[in-house]
Image 1: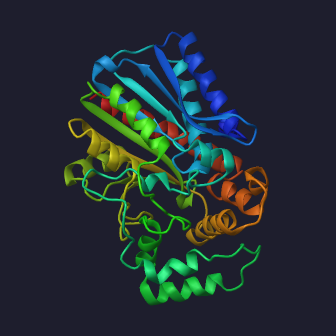
Image 2: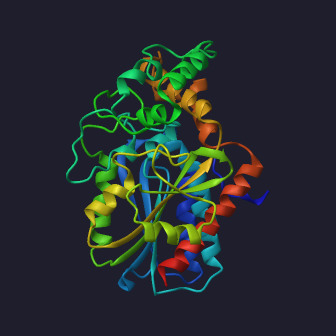
Image 3: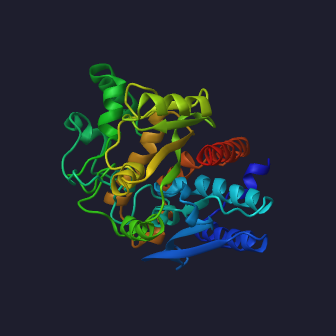
Length: 369
């Protein structure tokens, strides 16, 4: 199926294809500028790890569509595929000046290159973009109930007989939605645990925000799509919006994406309330801009399978025995992490590249109305 042609097998390949896509757009007559924001680290092949950014069209229009991917490392593979497919579509279209499209390719290049969800400091970057009135401190209300079971300080075994039963007991005792919220919300006290939001803004996000400060200084309207995988039925995309979204805007999004829109809350569907996600941080930092922001989340596997993969990989990274990161990356938990969020399934790949293009075009049309 054609969706698979856009998928890359490594960070280096994806980044290279993104740069080629920028050149293809220029050759087709589009105005394109792109930069490589180097995070000062290297990947498995010694390649420089960069947040690649590109602007297509004109910022003088005051209107911008932002497509971002890879804030959760391994999720950058499908995110990159969607962006490459969209860029290819643009080469078949006429150049434009009435808006700009900003592509942010892989917010977390370290995680993408080394098959992690978190960055080089074990930080979940989608919990790192705090608002000005928030601090890098605290844990979810019920975190003490689940901390030990989701963060054992041991090397992960291939098969863990009792994890499912323990998880089931916790669900029966506290409720699935409570557990989902406590696990996923974000915590700022345990650096070796999953969903750690850090103690300060991370180097990659800092580079990105400094770059956006310049690009967005004269912008009045932004439509933003952040690409993710993991939650929901396999291949189905859920359009997640902030729990604070007004009724009028929520209704508008439901009309644009019927059957796909859900609020980011533990009782609303596949999502949960997040602290420090990318769009919260951007909307707070650039509060003079009119924002429409969505997370396009593509389902992969059942929640327990996704959690087990994240838990096992982090246990290996924190407590495993290995000589260097190259050896660490060879472990089964890293491969499992990659495939849970980036299934090697042609039908799934075709579905997400198709829906990624569809949602992008709908957002683009809405930006221009």
